[in-house]
Image (cartoon, rainbow, N blue to C red; front, side, top):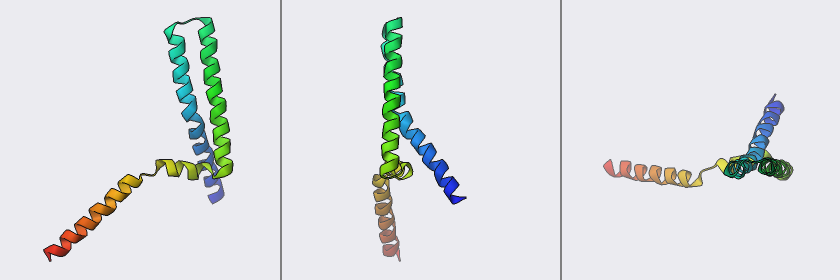
Length: 101
């Protein structure tokens, strides 16, 4: 059961890694096409989107082989600045409580 859950998480995180360049490329393609809508620009916009999809897939496979998509995404989602702030706040609160006694 745990292996299945881990596999599902790896797939979801890999999908997120693929989506990040794909969304950027799709936005760039949309801007290119909407600036002057024509068939040539539509083809160019689609090629930009496909190129970003390929880049995203290559990136996700590379990350999965190197360290695992879940480990990569956990490092991205981590907030060390906030953790440091919480530690400082808890140390200040403990000092204040010790002075009140």
